[in-house]
Image 1 (tube, rainbow, N blue to C red):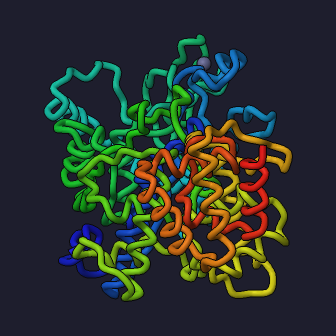
Image 2 (cartoon, rainbow, N blue to C red):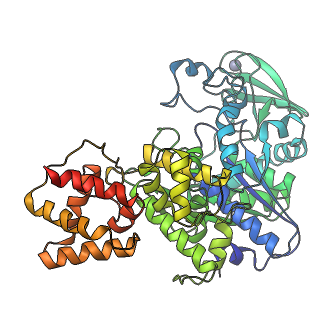
Image 3 (spheres, rainbow, N blue to C red):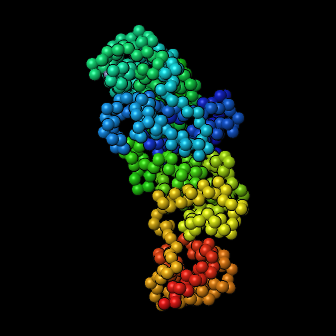
Length: 504
Ligand SMILES: [Zn+2]
């Protein structure tokens, strides 16, 4: 059974699937596991017929923790400020919206329809008033739970609400001195003294208290989260007890997911800039692929992601699942139907039928839309012009080549006056092929077979023999699979190029 179906199989009644990512910097591919895991659980719940909602809580009232490497030093003045009230790097009004925007745009491209809720707004609208009254009243109980599970002594002046200093703007520099609800009085390290109104966004609960308060106020029933929150004594453990013993509710069903590692780099961190922005992955790869990686991997297993050569293999794999779903091929995966259903994107079920790998070759041979259309029709594309869908896939292939493709995949067809440095044996191979080229069917198989026969007869290893063709046409020793590479070019063009190369 697919992991998402398995998680919801025993659930009944209304479900609220909640996810959350702090927009403290560029939201990266690693973070996508959170939202896509949630999305698949949500879709599984809907499929089961459960009345369900799916939300993304944007923690934009969280304070800026430090000046990250991707920020300039002017941000040192804003450390401790809520992310929603810091200027954006481009001069715009909101730091959190600046990083949120490309993320939300990416979600819309991968069929994630999630209700976005900003925590600043929840505080501003007084949605946490009831929770804050409860946690203030039961603060000793909470302190006990936190100490008990974390094994740490909680500071004497700890309070389940951090007021924001009205003078210096920071949310992490005040100490609560007394309270008279709805007002909480504080003293700040800047010297200011004042009061925060819990019905407004004038402060926030600390994370470990705020998390269960969200469950309580919103009615969260299922929540995926990373293993840092899921560790023994971590924030899920304390949240669960606070939910039960302070709010009197059941904690949501947890789903702990492992991380996504970037090949050759390791864990992705927004804070170091070692990451791939989530928005990149929907513009530099077929958007289904990101869903596919998450859908086919059990959440408890980490994912090694390689946006370079590995991506092509991944797309090949996805295309196999697609064919299996259509009954054209078999894949070794009991859940292949569900994996495909959770990977596909509404309205984009029917891709062109031209594989991404093939497209990557085509767009390097042909640069004009007219030539591309002509050759794609030969490859099975139906339509008299490149539709939006196709134009978009072509653009993605070009984007990927320019940013992530390894050199071995990249090539350009050499100009007409280019002559490769070929030895006599290589020229003989090409000459024999030219003699046959007129008479064979110009298909990948027939071209491959013709070349293969020539090489076999001459006792030349395939890799070496194929190399003479690549040298003549793209000036490199290696290239895309030869039969299908040549078949994508005009027969006369290929013959002319080869003749020119053997003529000197
Ligand atoms: Zn202050």
